[in-house]
Image (cartoon, rainbow over all chains, first blue to last red; front, side, top):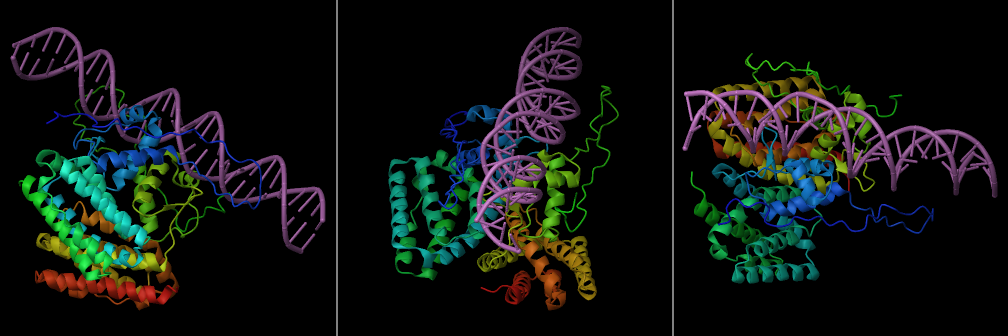
Length: 247
Length: 247
DNA sequence: CCTGCAAAAATGTGATCACATTTTCGGACG
DNA sequence: CGTCCGAAAATGTGATCACATTTTTGCAGG
């Protein structure tokens, strides 16, 4: 085990040509599809969130403003906003010392995560089902294939990314503005923990329950999809929780 | 000229003594019970969140950094952090113009809110039930009494505050770190809308379903509590939605 | 070898400034 | 009287500085 390693990955931020310059010409119609250069704090947010969800940041290890800013090559300001945002989503905790870190998992919190997932995700899947077209189903299958491959090779990081893609490719079929953000928030909370567990025990304990879900989607079987998602969550999570959480 | 950014309420921020001066003398003793002065951005967060949840800010009306800062008597900086935080929780939306406002309700979003509430809140109540002691039950009853009184007088603001207190006094019995924050996020999303509806139709359409919940708590009847909470949500929300949302 | 403890470094917070964009306003033109 | 357009005001974003507090370090004394 890598003893208390720092960031597992470089954690770099994409900063393509500043692009702040823009249109002065007042071309009226021309349907100005504003490229709307993403603010730096948004990019930091994305980078940091990905790092958390894929378990690149060790729970408990402090995340410092200036440290992150230096790593990403930006000023502390956008980092501050990104951290505040992710904290609100549950991906980081701010201790009474005002120190920031990825929260570590407890038995109680794990139970709540399982409960929230098994409540929200089948519902989101059921609501998304009518909006899953052929192209999306193909992407879902592709994600599942990636999962299978990652399970064979034992690539934890790849597995987690593909698993995330599989689930949210389903839930995102209907433009959800409430359920999916809530689910995203839950994933943000258990992502680091999953990574930790997989790193310790390997992905061998995982059973791929996704085939049932894919079949249910193809058959437009809402109840079947609900059951498949629920089974996937409960199987995976309970096995993980039992294997690693003592209380 | 405060004619423009006029908020329904003063929206003042509590700023007790906390002057920047403070301890220059190194006098270590004096038992400094670190009150851990709350950061300004936290106070702004509380103030703003309350304002949103009680419907003091009109959906669609832009919330500006400098405007809020001036109203609260602070610099734009802590306001920025508070806004970022509340946006992450769904209480504000940041438009592509980067303008910030309270999101207005749509039929689709309302359906999702109802779904999320009826999934999460009965579960949170059931989990909290074993931890509800006599003192808390008394507070719950008191909140219900306040609701009754508010319904009689037609005081919308009081009703909303008491209703919020009633629900979260229940859910908060067990220190929940996942479900309750999620529920809070959902309330943040429909609070302004409720206020709007009540303001238009009055609180007459409300039926108090809380008596069932209180009885179930007293009887330690988990299934009964789940059903009561669910009925409360569905009755109230569906009536409101039917009365005001056309699509 | 450990324990205090003061100095030094680091951290979060808040304010202010600069700047590009967006919005608003006022007047000229059709 | 309505429509456009340019100037002026306002807004969000990012950087930098100041400061109180926390954490770490270094070194003395037991």
